Image 1 (tube, rainbow, N blue to C red):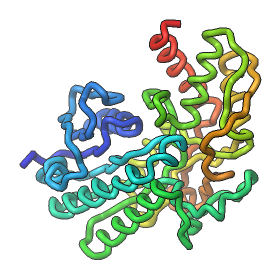
Image 2: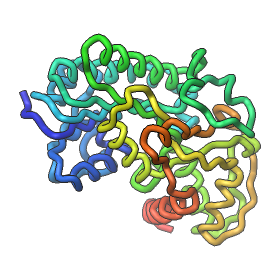
Image 3: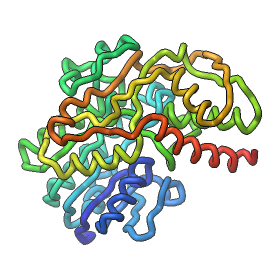
Length: 327
């Protein structure tokens, strides 16, 4: 059995996981980083960690990951992506219930200190998100349940698992409902990318090729809020170490249309664009984060502005696009 560590990060090879591991290491924590992907496919690999390639759908792999125990276990492991992925891969998304369940079982048996589960705004009821001018979603709006088909239902079910492991077995579970996390060192092409990264890629290609027309799914009037990765990592650790056991929103409340997101990035890039609206998966019409509870419990909320965050993200994606396509 592996020795105990300060923190275990499941899904460490992913976008959020890579940033979280870096933050934990900066605190001087010992970290075991685990992901199903080969190490050369991890978004960030940190040499001063114990890095394991394991399939956490398997219970024994989860037991190896948790080892003799940890002060903190962060479960970010799941199959996910932007709307283009989750609308066309519902079964794959639902199968994330295996790492979600097996990590809880392993953590319970190892008597870990705190167990963090990364849930999603996709748990919220679809009938609450039919208008672009959306009322911000309160935590209570997950019920009566009408979650995003596939991905959202798995997240909502696993939230309940966390609750019952806490109630029945005393495992100290903590849950954040992430709202559209974005930033550098993430997926920006290939089909799993989310709107901010996809926007940056399209604008970067337009800038590098001297083109003006940029394609966008739908009419672009659907609304979202987007949360920069630094705010996400700060909130994740804060929730894990805090006393609030109920799921809480972890999201920016700065609402924007997708059209305006494209125009913002074009402005950052210093180019003029014309949007060409085409058919494509859209998700709900409007979604925003109500931050009443996070402010009540922690006196904090994500505050990095969309312009600041997208400026950093665009710079990183631009360099990735330029290098990949030799432009």
